[in-house]
Length: 426
Image (cartoon, rainbow, N blue to C red; front, side, top):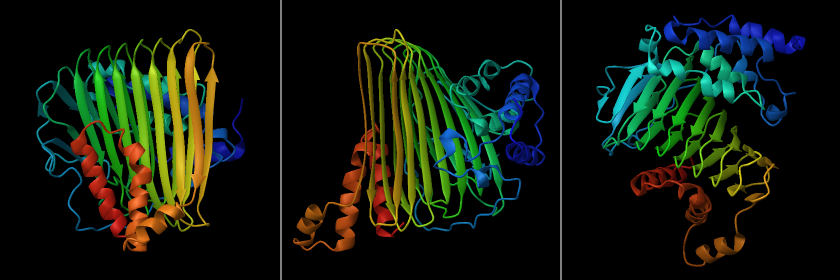
C-alpha cells in the first residue's frame, strides 16, 4: 500500500539529509532497515501510537536548534568508580573516555564494527529492532538502525567490578545525533550500565539488549537538564530463561522526550522491571511508550511510571502487556500516575492488557491528581515552607519508581540529584 502523500514527502525529505555509513558486517541490517522506513514512512499524528505526541520536530529535515544549558552542579554519578564512555553530539570522544578495557567485558565501537566483515554484533545488530516493529511500527528506530554511525557494542561475559557509564554531552546548538548501542549479556554474567547527559539538540538513540539464560542487566539513566533538547530513544530487550532486566529512567526538562521500551520475555522464569520518573515544567512534553510481551512460563514484569507536571507541562504514558498463549503463571503489573501541580498541565494515559493464557495475574492502573492538601497542611503547620513541603511530597510521590533501582548507591545519587533540581525549581 502506497504511503499517504504527506508522510511520503516528509520521509523523503528527512532521508535526503542522511548518509548511510560504511556498512561492513552491518550492511544487510542497515539496508533492511532503510527498506522498512521507506515502506512504513516516518511517524505522523494519524498513527495510533503518536496521537498524543507530535513527531514533527523529531522527523523534520530542518536543522534542529537547542541552546546549550550551563550548570555548575557536579556530574551525576561523578563520585562512582565507573568505566566512562563519552560521546559529544553523538560522536565518540577518545580523549574524554577511559580505555575500553574492563574485566568480564569486551567493548567495541560501532564505527570499528562497520569496518569488519565478521563480528559477534553482526548476529544482533538490527535484529531486535526489527522484531520490535510488530505489532506496532517504530520507524524512528528503523531510521536509527539504517543511519547511526556511532555507538558501542558491549559483550558481557563475566561480572565486571564497576558499572559502564555512557555519558552524552551537548556542545553544538545545531547537533543532530544518532547512536546505536548493542549489549549482549552471556549466561550467568551480570553488569550495570549507566547513561546520563542531554546528548544533542536532537537525539535519536537505539539500544538492542540480548540477555542469555541466567544473565542480569541493571540499567539506570538520567535525561536532562537542557531546556530545549528533543529526544527519541528506543530500547529493545530480549530475555532468556531465569534472566533479569531492570531499567530506570529519570527525565527533567526538554521540549520533547519520547522513550520507547520493547521487552520480550522468551525464557521461563525471566524478570523484567522498567520504571520512570519525570519532572516537567512549562513547555515540556514527555512520552513513555512501553510494550511487554510474555512468551514463556512463570515470568514477571513490572512497569512503574510517575510524572510530576506543572506550568502547562504534558505527560504521556502508553503501556501494554501482551500475554501469549501458553505463557501461564505470568505476573504482570503496570502503574502510571501523575502529580499535577496546577490546572494547566495534563496527563494522557493509555494502559492496555491483551491476554491469551488463563493462569495469569495481570493488573494495570492509571491515576492523575493534585498534591495532597492534607499532607501539605500538616507540613506547613510544622513550620515547613510551601516550597519545601511541595518538594518533600513530590519526592514521596516519585519514590515508588525510584525504589525500582536495586543498587542503593545509585538510588541515592538519583534522589540527591532530584532534590537539587527541585530546590532550583528545575
